[in-house]
Length: 126
Image 1 (tube, rainbow, N blue to C red):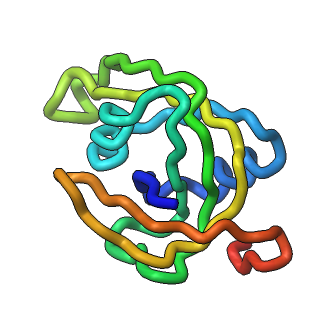
Image 2 (tube, rainbow, N blue to C red):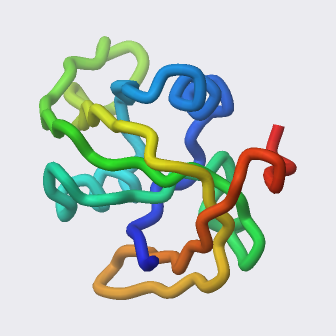
């Protein structure tokens, strides 16, 4: 299956999704935010701990279905940034399964990955 990629997701968030099949993440990374601007509720996405530069054939991660997306702005204290607001996307996901990337491709400014579904015992990500 070919899925849009959400990269650089913390192990804490991935582990929480594995323990509880529903999880809401707050996405601030511009690359991941762009992906979530283009997907719709009901679409599948692939999440991985690896940064985009390290995503290659064999990278493992999680396949999840987008349940709900909420886009918002949060104010940033002026002492911490040159900007006053940051775009945030809250996305509720439902665990579908585990996967390993077999191909990486960029299309229209987004990275898509072809994924092979895996069983728990095949995973090495820890």
